[in-house]
Image (cartoon, rainbow, N blue to C red; front, side, top):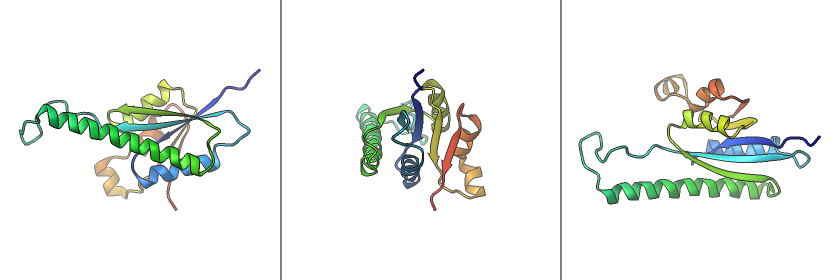
Length: 157
């Protein structure tokens, strides 16, 4: 019986912490002997729902289009950087898939894990202290509690 391909999802953003987690994953979880698929997940923030900001200013369609274009360019830049890390660590022989989603990162990551049937989720940690984590919330804490697979949270040394 052929062994099922293992799917490892790495949540990446523009932070050094997420790129460190990717490097750690490639060095510690990916081996040449096992069938593994690397899912690179980037979550874009939700789009402006209306053309008004919180102060009541109206955004023109051109401004909204420019914001959406910038968001996509940022997502592609993050993915290019992640793929460059894979190449630099000689991880070119693994199957890799780009996944770009949109929404609240903690919820999107957990739902995408389930939708793509990931076996493991790897994430970086920003290392926020208690007060900052309490005020801002922690995406990695949320995913560790709610993702439907094992979660590895990698901290930078």
